[in-house]
Image (cartoon, rainbow over all chains, first blue to last red; front, top):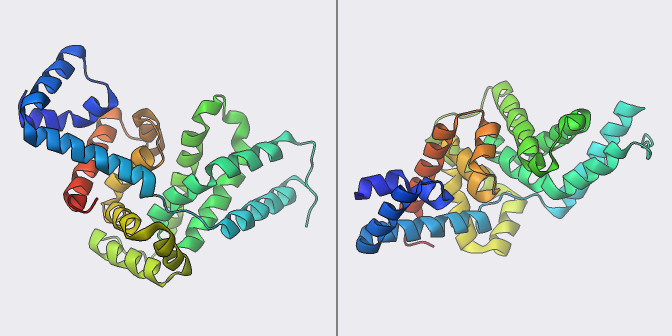
Length: 79
Length: 178
């Protein structure tokens, strides 16, 4: 496997979706290619950082206000 | 204020779904409409729709994907109705930054979540919309690739390509910063 093939298959590799032979080739390539090992490591860091810090969240007060508003509107709809 | 029919179990379901998924709905909506007020409108409209359609939800393990699909469509509908929305990605980035920097929430978020969180959030927000939504749904909200494909109404290959390209751009932007 070449570097560009590994990068093209990176998402499938991370999802565990590669077939056994292709995954074995990817692992073999990673064991000998520091560039791709770095790409994999950095991609994993980006995924973890997105999961931990990527949210745009409502404030607690907005959360409560919106739930009350939704329930009010549903009350109107069903009455 | 109208009284709720407490015998209607759909109200309990809505409260539970809201508590578990409203933040995710807001997160997706904000990344499309780019202001808190419209994102909050999307949250409300989404849960009204959920109430009306809850009988269609057969598999509760797929509730999050189903909700986010409704939210995504609601947000796009708001976007289509707006005439003044900047569409160029560079304009959008400036628009987002201005909106965030002037909001009280942004100030408190910055203090609470720190510079690193802002850096990551800004990098995600600067992605083109197609890549941004794929990253928000897969990596931020944790949907499977199949669920992301359902929400965005695109095929599995296109979904994988968007996630791959989004991660590549984030990596290029964030290397050395995280």
